[in-house]
Image (cartoon, rainbow, N blue to C red; front, side, top):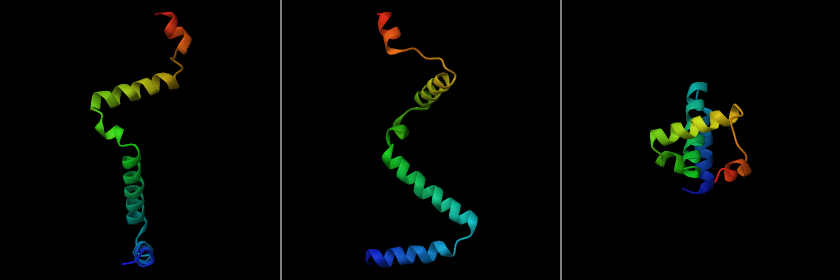
Length: 74
């Protein structure tokens, strides 16, 4: 099947979907691209992911130090 035929077939299939099904397929397609682009996240353990999320929360709350402050300690 040629590329143009595949696209037309997909368009016809998508056109027949209801809203809920369309959202599910959209999420799947978008997330499958993100996993490939950001594959490192799926290789992290749960505690590593939680630690990163905690660090990001700290940054959002303003709990941070500049590079110079950290280096001055050592």
